[in-house]
Figure 1 (spheres, protein in one colour):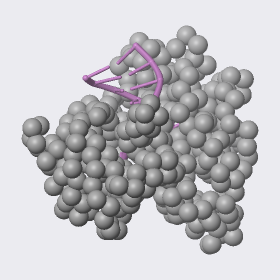
Figure 2 (spheres, rainbow, N blue to C red):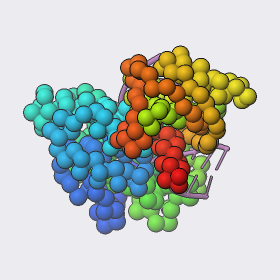
Figure 3 (tube, rainbow, N blue to C red):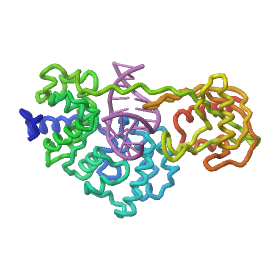
Figure 4 (cartoon, helix red, strand yellow):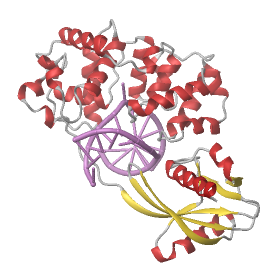
Length: 362
DNA sequence: AAATCGGGGTA
DNA sequence: TACCCAGATTT
């Protein structure tokens, strides 16, 4: 028995928690399916993403790609378009690659072995535990942010939950508490408790089904937990972007590189700028260097802010024109309406939307 | 171990 | 603002 579990009664805890879960759980789309493919999609989408955000994406994605085979055969551009706006786009590319592997190596059947499933792209310790327990009822712990918050409080543990060593501690603890009978309900119950009752601020201890098991509650320190080191503020970056028209009424767009931020998404040409007074000039120099396009930047039209985890873009959008020249790989002239077929970052969706509205007024 | 990778909702 | 979210991968 793990030393942190002294005086902890796993059997009573399981009963209190799972009993509450079976009575109070939310009716979520992926809880209506037993298909491992559906469970898998939901778990990837739910990484660092709220349930309410995921729900519409979950429906649309499965409508577009109802089966392993459908997703395996899809073009990456289609997959990215379905993921547009959900963020962390490597999730979509990794999922696509993993599903292709399942189609080819496992006959289209999601592998239920820990080693096999964990080896798939984009499947880490949490997702492996979640899918294996929920879809296959395997007794595997699934430790996410909810679980660490809940157990920090239950065990009154002041270790920084941002540290790997702390996560390992929780995985060991959960491995001992996890019931063999219904690990699916147990894992989901802990996360549901974290989402509905044991919330980051103002936890609802009075409504908590396991309040009698909680050391933080007993000590009145539930609001102090979990301990988590503050991360530094994102840095700001001034950007210029350009809507460049050619003589045929087409617009210049660009595909971002294979790696890094917003990888492989499409965008209006843009670049980081240094001097406020020379934004338009710097934009022109960028287009000349990268696309051999010599634009005439005519006027500023919009400003767009985009916040990332570690970065804030302040994008100054210009409009201009250029001759319709041949373009390097990754650049395209496209009609206005066609831009809607490409997956764009949210900042560029905003630019596109404003542009369309402006054209409709004319 | 630390940095990177989105976007939106909430206090 | 700052924080958080059913984290994984790269450096």
